[in-house]
Length: 498
RNA sequence: GGGCCGUUAGCUCAGUAGGUAGAGCAGCUCCCUUUUAAGGAGUUGGUCGCUGGUUCGAGCCCAGCACGGCCCA
Image 1 (cartoon, chains in turn yellow, cyan):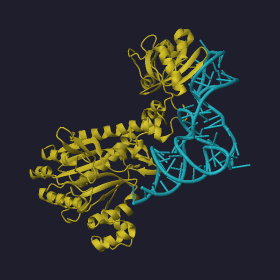
Image 2: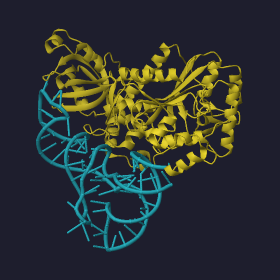
Image 3: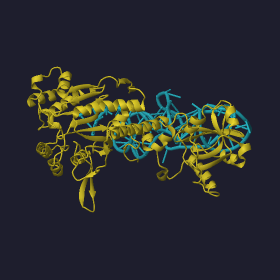
Image 4: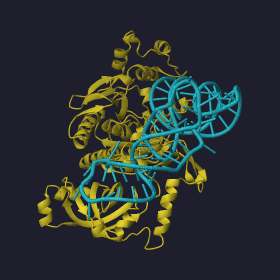
């Protein structure tokens, strides 16, 4: 894949089309913008799809359609064209007898060009609802040939780099992004109906907070201030709960300065919501309802296949604690030593986990969980009671302060959501931040900063609150049977072309 | 960062043992007034990702690099 600007010599196919465009420039505007449609392909099918040839002849309906020429079949003095608009495709029938000189021009137009046509609807010999063109115009010349009309565009790299081409020729790709939009629309409607308020909080933050991740750094020139692209909106959203916005959510991008994979893009979309007077159990129930609601909305059923495996969202979602999960997947482990640091450290070594020097029992538990258990949760599963050590923003459990009232939600072995009862005790939160700072000073680049303003906000008192984050890209992957996050991102990050 | 795989015409792909590059579609010329990947006849089109090396000779073998894919850390 070489760009013409750098290759010096233009492709012959493009040169041919450029010559056609040059000829067009001699007359009327080559890129006119005075054509207006009055019908879309899908509307035409919906409105007149059930009318037969005789009805259409007796009740003439004239439509103006426009779109990209996707198929061109010339048979001497008559032709068929397929025009693609945003709703679908409509066939246009062109005849020399009706179009005169324009018909000769049409024969020189190319698949990929943008056309407008007007004429009455009729049915062809084979019964296809079509437009019998009385006029047809070239609205925009395509200089580049489209990929193979039958095989489409298969090259993964080109599909990602030139998504516009992928969207033109691959129906399946368009369907993925249509479904992505439908899912996000559903989530918004669901939350709006619960009286949640959608808000926007800073993407550029002086202190990156709300998650354990390495941030991107940028610089504000006027303030001469380094700033961070947010790794999460969490601390800002909770400030809003302090302010009395008792139900808030935000759907937007987070940025994490980490590697790329089939599960990770440096910028990804997260839904975060904060719900006062609710707890983590309410959130688990909410997630179950959302998952079924998404299925109902975009699939019309709760049974689906993801990457060859069947899933049934009607079945109750599993719920298991972190410690139960560790015991279930590490048969030899001693249940009474699950919080014993030297014991867990030895167990980690046996699993080939490189534990950090300062890791406590909670961190070591999570390492063991992630290595041995996480990927096994294929059916929807809530894993809860996360250790406080790895949950610096979560409320400690009343009966057992080693753990927090926090869960993560797994489907197909992947984390789709993370939720917890929020830590609203400002003194506990300050102590947790100090512990994070100690970790950061010990070399943990993902440890959190101390956010003094956030502590100040909590000191005004935050109501008891539950907070949830849902990874939208992974959710869309699941509901579109997509193996890679790049398949659900319109413009996934790639290295620059050479 | 490591391992494996890939990169050949605009697109989708073949390419024999290392002997000088092919198909289909698209394009171009011609025929064709109801096609559905329209059809028929003819025809153009390649720095085989890049740079080196081995060889009389490299798309093919070797090394490095670039980009992509999958897996691992």
